[in-house]
Length: 123
Image 1: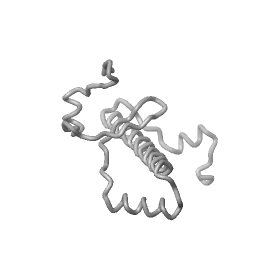
Image 2 (image 1 turned 120 degrees about the vertical axis):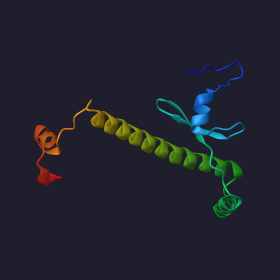
Image 3 (image 1 turned 90 degrees about the vertical axis):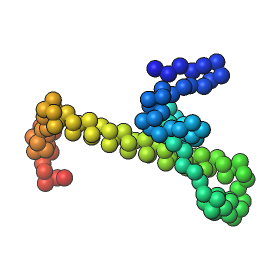
């Protein structure tokens, strides 16, 4: 469990920081999800990428505030997709471990389709 202090700060356990490679001074991105917050290492943006974004903004006559808002929206979408993909991969890995250990049995696709009343030819 992590506690928020009076300054709104949290301390990540040292073991988890080491495991995730969060060194002192590391920049993290916080992405809000339906079920909480997701932390990930920040990916630095190159000067050339920033220059390209600046040129797009000038061509579209966007204000700096609008550009920053657009970038934040894009970044949130990317992180949300990454988070959802990461969750799906973790669920599959967990399922594979359960199957390998014998704790869970897989049901053949034909059985699932038959119970659902779906013909294989309709797929």
